[in-house]
Amino acid sequence: MPFQPIILTVSIVDSIPRKASMKHLKKGLLLLIVCVYCITLFITPAIASVKLNGTFVVEKSCEAFLSIKRKTNPGNVLVKRDETYEILAKNKEDATHYLIRINEVEPTTRWVAVDCGKIIDEPVVISNNDYLLALSWQPAFCETRPTKTECLTEDTNTFEASHFVLHGLWPQPPSNIYCGVSQDVIKLDKDSSKWLKMPPIQLSADTRNELTEKMPGVASGLHLHEWYKHGTCYSESPEEYYQESLALLDQVNESPVRDLFVENLGKELNAREIREPFVVAFGENAGNKIEVKCKKDKDGDRNNMITEVWINLEGEIEANTSITQLLENADKAQLGSCKGEIDPAPVNE
Image (cartoon, rainbow, N blue to C red; front, side):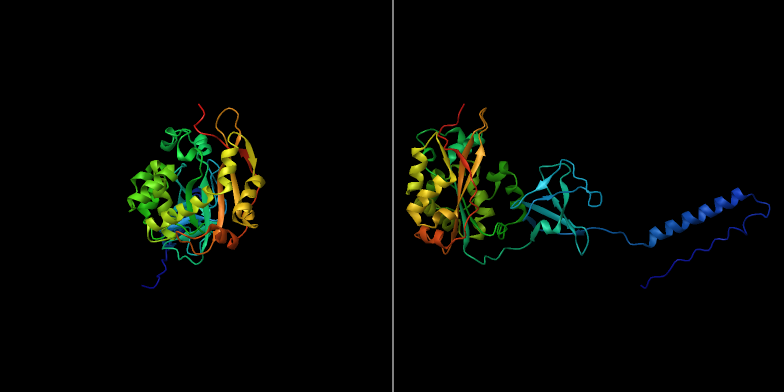
């Protein structure tokens, strides 16, 4: 139906006796203004947000506002690169901000600028063969998270006391995550205490046993988190994803890189010293493809510890693929200048 203007005719002067006071006239004018204002509100469409579904992947750090106009941000909340959130709405068709849910803060719904990241509302298409292999030094991890299930049983005789363990194999770019994963599973994955509530995955007995040893985080559901967030963008098969991830891990553990860590338990190493055995084992350019990660110990000394080694890879990966060629093909890493202790097992009391 075409818009029909509403015409309001109010005769104030005729309704007022000639000897009426100016006071009555002012009241009448005020009534007219109020009526016109109410009609304007009635015929003006409300500005509302536009509902969205999907996952928001953060590509750069941004503030998370409670109010776009006022730029209020209780708790000074920041979303950081590679984090993912449920997306609820955009502020208008030609959006400047997205409304996302951040479960860890109050209020949980916040606005972030559209250039802060991207929306994933359907499976991501894998368009390259770039990967990041994340290997952990478990004794250092357990110093930062001593109450984790896998850390309660750590001792000097366990595999992780003298070997790197698998954190994950991550298809790149960082936004290449949760391929074909339902929102219900993504919500569970956002809370690490609920990882074991995610649907189980099918693995052969041999692969499951090997993974349990070489990824201690299985005890807390890390294998489910890594599969749903990263593995689904690598393969349709959890078996293939973990067999090939473990084969890459084994190549590093069978190299002088692992020997360097074992020989320096309780001592400090810097990133340059850690890159050197990569060059010896995997070629002259391999050291430039490595990023060394550090964290502070939670004990009284707050010492820096080497916690992880991130390895850039590029190429087709199969169970027998040599990591040497994958390193040669890969882009250079963010080298940094991390320096820290090679923490020995078990967790310090």
